[in-house]
Length: 359
Image (cartoon, rainbow, N blue to C red; front, side):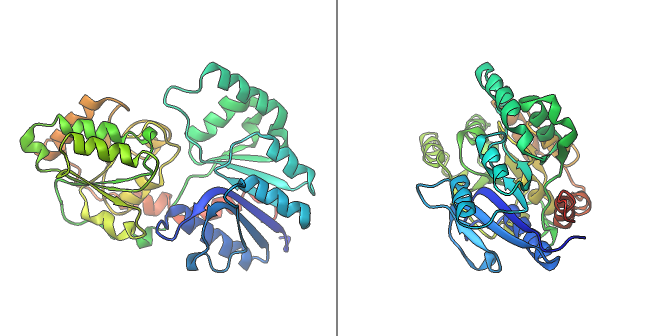
């Protein structure tokens, strides 16, 4: 093994002390593992703040008027280049990767966490992606999808010539931090999501509105998260007089302990790659009601560890909720064993380390 590589990790991701989630724990474990192996890591994030969880990191946070890509390139112009560059949450096949490659010819790994639209990109976007693939894909040495769905999308979007250098590394979580649900807690449900329109929470509100009143009164749904669609969702809840059913809790660093208090997690999303929230919910032994988008069906099997309904089908979601609340549909088996075995943090870190040419 060759020691002493200088590795840059560039993430379009904000650091927030009130939102320490699965990716934060992955970043920390990845950093610790590579430091122990004698490598140097420099991290670039799109914003947020430095806090104790990230002690031991060499951190660079982009300014308010600066992209994380520009922040990394500015660093490279002043300092020596990197041996390896890993990117997370960045757009693929852009001129940024050409600029990265021109500095010291690093080995570049691009990890794709970006969801695709429910019905695919419009024709103009598809043509543009193919062109970007031809122009810039050669500057990336390894593409990584966080699900098989995502890996297939990379090849479909940017060209079949990427097939041999596109790999799948599933997300994983630290299962030890999740308290396990033991009681039924029927009627108490959780949403853990960024609050934007593509997450479909507006469909959930509509579905609850048309439930029969006796069933609706049994529901208590806590929504954890924040985002640009939050005010719109709150207005919907108020307009439909559903304040007794929905409570907006904001972001919380305590979700690993809170999941156990709920009977189901709801995820009516239109776009997904491979949801960490699903893994977190199952790790807490809480089944999931979600849609078949992205990589969701790579982890959720209808009737076994959750229930699937078509994205945007409010009537189907209403029927699911009613059947769950009346006991016609039920999941009683333990759900955490699969996550602990196949989607744990240790495996995720090990699989990402295998991508590095220095390991």
